[in-house]
Image 1 (cartoon, helix red, strand yellow):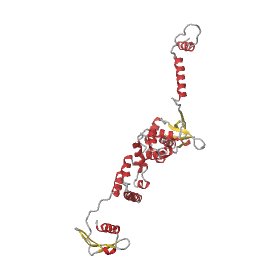
Image 2: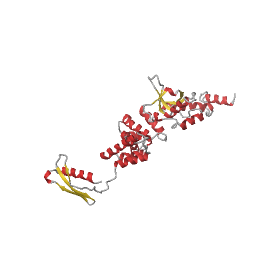
Image 3: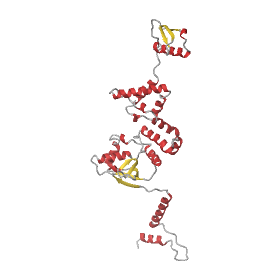
Image 4: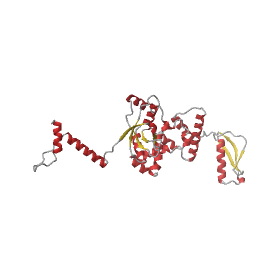
Length: 337
């Protein structure tokens, strides 16, 4: 009998008590290691310490994007996936599996992609561009939507190719969908600070009318959101900013100059706080009468030059204090440039 087999036999008989003498000390042979390892493995699986993973090679056409996926699939193109495509070509396969879950009740699809939109797009592109034998490598898991959201967020948080705006919109959607609008709860589940989460939510909450000003809104980051949010208060500044955003969008659509991200923010800032008037009064000749909204004569402009505006209050008109203030404002708007 070979040493390997004799060791195996000794391992099998070590625990059998054939005599009244103490059992000999068990040798740590190959079989002992195999049996012990298998026992430990089963114990880990039973306790949940280890979860088995099922990897499959599938047709990407049988996979759909999860509705809660944090990447906008429509924005993917050959340029954004160029590095991944080249890597797959050189390796001859997809190295890292995408995370999916099985689809039930849909005859068109077998899986739903939780993490791996770029991998899915790249494999699909390769299959339609002279690489028909490429398969989509997937890691099949069972999970609920909130767990899927957290898993996708963890995987994509450090990826530079996922824009701040994509991540921000995903967070805003998830806030109500999974956490009942409780921002603190969401931050705790994601293991991030509440202030960190707030910056992304502020970006996602910027009004659509404002976003029209930008030629490439996807370039906006959380730092830009801080500056833009400040331009929307109070209401009069908000009105001017949104009007300027619409003007910029119309000019771009008409074939005008396309401003850079920073120049667009600058233009919006100037609209929010236009330069103050110079303080030089217009020259005025003959006296003018300024009436209130109800038609009552309130003020008479006797003249205006560099020394100022000479006004006379017309008392016979019986105007109220509010009407006088309104008329005075109209005079300043007309004669102070």
